[in-house]
Length: 169
Image (cartoon, rainbow, N blue to C red; front, side, top):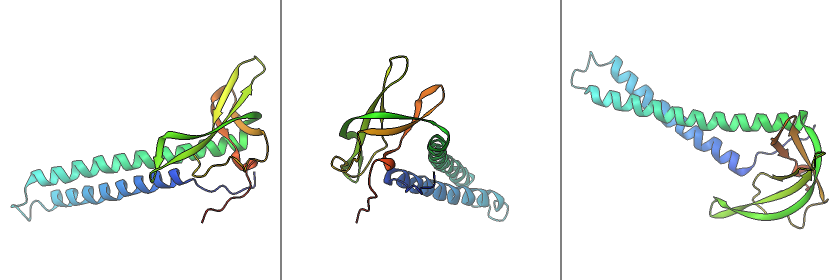
């Protein structure tokens, strides 16, 4: 696929959120380790504060790295599915607001689509969250979905193929 994909708002938020945790954690971790290294020259510096800074810094950095690595893993999986997955065409189901996720006080929109496999099993796929209502913009009733072979629960709904180019200002 030669198209360049734009990062959605939730993924960008999670990268920034994780990056902030990594930065704060690293600062605390370095401050605690420097305190341990300089404990000989400053006998008044309490060991408890160094332990606190080192422990909290390590915890914050670990949380931040976990968030960032999870986002990188999700992006790679989706890219791999779009490049190497088995493409099927699913029928447009419904377009709805996902009230379980709110970004800046607004609910994200999702598109669900249905696909019946060769064994007669109906699969329902949900798109990633959109920050606009795509109701009048879908150009087709067949939406490409990319599946991992043998794992229909690993999928990527390709709305870019059926939506026009959109710029939100």
